[in-house]
Amino acid sequence: MSKGRENETGVSEFLLLGITNDPQQQQILFWAFLCMYLVTVAGNTLIFLAISSDPHLHTPMYFFLANLSFVDVCFTTNLIPRLLASHVAGTGTISYTHCLTQMYFLISFANVDTFLLAAMALDRFVAICYPLQYHAIITHKLCMGLAAIVWIGSGLISLVHTLLMSRLTFCTSIPEISHFYCDAYLLMKLACSDTRVNQYVFLGAVVLFVAPCILIVVSYVRITVAVFQIPSAKGRHKAFSTCSSHLSVVILFYGTVLGIYIRPPDSFSTQDTVATIMYTVVTPMLNPFIYSLRNKDMKETVTRLLNRGSKSS
Image (cartoon, rainbow, N blue to C red):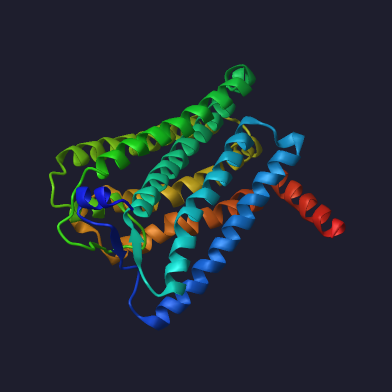
């Protein structure tokens, strides 16, 4: 950290207060987070490898799922190793640069998550409502283009937040953040300089975050209408089964995120920290199980991949 950077912002580091001050609870949480992180990395990596290795899974839906698995690994890796390391070191301090870097990737990966879920909903909408035109509409070129826009656009959105945050000054030498990571909401609350521009941009980001959710809701309303027009019960069940895994992930992710951020910043509480753990740690861990256990093709591919690995060892 340069002296100029420290003088400009007023701080050289922050103090993350974490989840609890109880040493016994901290020990339990350490092992819980470690186990969940290892399961998340192993499960999502397995999903990514399964999709990459099986030509039958080289379809638009699984292409977006592979991207989702990759970003889930990145999302948790941005948070959990730092949390575990701070427990081992016995300190919650985080450097100014590291804090803004963590915030940048957190916002970027969260946006990628939301846009990918919307893209997957759009894929299911076209597949069920316009099955005959599906391959003409959802092309490989379109999928690659959407993925590029999602990743690059999310990075640029996050960059704007980070640059605006870097302009803020803080009144105390080591500001305390009541969380286990650098949250943009809480950083704005700690700043003693004018944060109006940051708040306007943050409000725009919330709207941009909700927009994919609206697209998902509209898609599933249209899907539901189309499915109930299918005459046979077997046909309706088959159509719904192709959406069940995605819908489960959407409800799990948006249910916790919207509950936290569609509120004033002053209302942030311990309950919000628990909800944050759900969408930053638990949801990425559960995604591979939801998609593999409720999807026959994925289950068979994962089983073959595991059997191949056990035989080679």
